[in-house]
Length: 551
Image 1: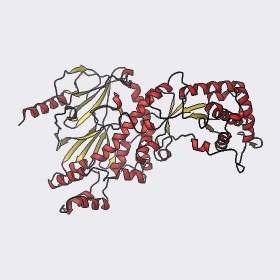
Image 2: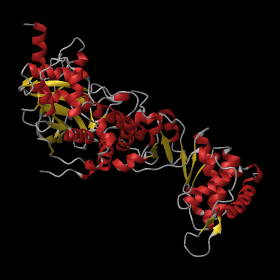
Image 3: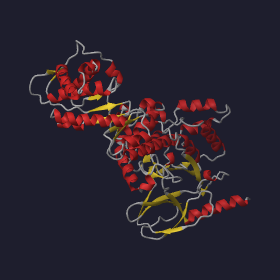
Image 4: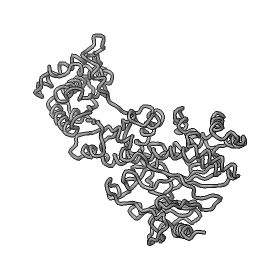
């Protein structure tokens, strides 16, 4: 038997397990389960597909995410006696006790999951998960799996959009935990915004449980809590080299403040002593990574000269300041002015590294503001985004659905007057076809029983139309292709390793790089094509015609 993967074991924690328990479901899943059981259909083989109908935010793509959480949920799936006791209290009192015995004996040893790898580009109607197993059981999996996939894929896609706007060089820090929809939402957002392209998160628990790189600066509360140097404060700092006696950092800072203010034409008495004392305290705690939050009072008349004084005092002892952060005002203009002063001071005081000190910004940054901050003339190095990554304000839900496609090996299809909500019947395979430049041409859906397409061989496909309407087929010859759906879970065990979060992040960035610039446009992008094989197209048309003709 395969040993549990270390990363998945690491991710087990009380809150995460509670969030993925079997009773994290809708009541109608339980009532349908009872009806299946009474009808003698509990063990009928069935298959569901989990997919979405439209890419979110008006994009042409979605990032598949949440698979690692699904695997953890499936491996641990088991109704506890307390769960069954509760279900007995909400179901009819005359429910046969044998039904509850059946529930308590359930696990996922008879379930098979085929899925797109985490971090893969995904498109409308192409399954993210194919879930097969006993009808009653796979019906019970619907709500938890949707819950685990929907938001993870949405926030990963939102993060990918923000990364595309920022470009490859700007560092992005996710800092939305305090604005997230609850603790589990915060952990999920931090995990999958990293997968989508952010560099780090302020969420310490995401670092501990998921291996997300953590980063942060300091808050205004820290700065404003100081009114001056405390008598009990230890102000001595040893040189970075370890050679020579410690020196009083506050005395060095006050000395440098006079020089900085004289050079910049500022009045030292207008700088805020409490702010300077706060910077000194933080520098003493983190001499190798000192950062200053500049806008607690006046950026140019206090925050910046105070930071420079502490940074130059640290430099005298052999340390390098790490950076500054702005959290209000015209971030772009202030960053340009600060960078200009850094360059002048680096030259004047002969401290070359000072001109490259990192400038970080935050303050309710959305796509429009980010586009400005990512401009080629911007002097911003790191951008902190909170609310507008974790809450996905442009679209709060991906809208994944979980639809039955076969029972006892026979295709099933939902027919409705709303053609967009109609489903594709039958168990399917999916392939991504590529041209000679390695760019994806389209995703092909076909029945699982069909032989796979072959590279270099001509192929007849039909553009996807779930209504089964008339459309013209096209002929193409893929240079290469890849199967999209892999078997990750079978007979209660994982049968393909889940890549690390960092590996999935790298896959996402590589996948995005394969799309054309027109497809990556955030407004009015060129749509990506999904097509059907000849056999699946014919089946779809046949089912559509038979439904119109009636019995």
